Image 1 (cartoon, rainbow, N blue to C red):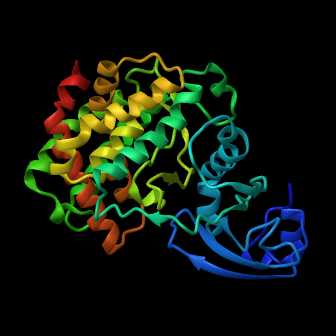
Image 2: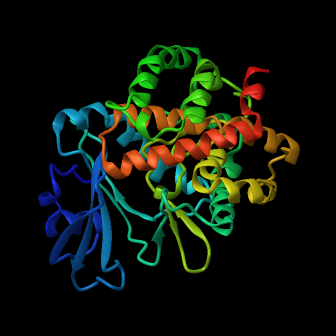
Length: 350
């Protein structure tokens, strides 16, 4: 592995030549996105083998520029690097090809050089997706879960653990203050939350720590934030999954439920969610997973609670933006409607 760069300026032709194992004569970096946990650049390359052996552009993922922020989330960087280098090659989910990965050093510095999927259209969490796009993303998700479903060797990957009682206790300690922050009109998005949804969230909060421990006998590699903003949709109707900083192990249907309950409008979800779950289940069966459809649906119903955790903690502890506030409010409304429709709280309490 090459030495982790201190900043994008270190991604010079000499560094890139070593990383890509081909002569790079010039590079033009352009920042893309507004990532809060890191930064991303599109690198336009020039060299004798560019356009042939190596592509004309690659994406470079780098850590947060602030040293304190970088050190705080270094563990998530390590998880993403391990996913691309150790875990993704053993799965069947469509993700950007990793051209090169450095180690994550003690200061949280690293670099990933990833495929620039130029034909892909980024999903929009606010606008939502079509039922067809939800099915495509669910089928791709089965390629994450199915190949190593309940594989005990996954726990041997450094940093890949199944949530236990200590994690539930930690959540129980943080959740009340995070919930108050989230629903406060000044510190959170309370002004954008309907009274019915605030009541659902309050009613659900006592079961959320225990939800972390539910059905631990079924596990797989999970994305942890499998939603539209982290997906690309290709012209052929397929999808590509991005942003693996929240990767871990857990109940697979949580990823599925988070995608469906937050990505579809309430009306579309009610009309097509059984079709989406059935498509996901059929793809799982192709990998030899022996779960029956009724159990998969039951896991999906329980997994509807996943959105609450991401929405509350993401908004309460993340950097606030106008779009972010609207996104979390939209996701919460869709999540709470799904929890009520699917009777997920009764399932969690039972």
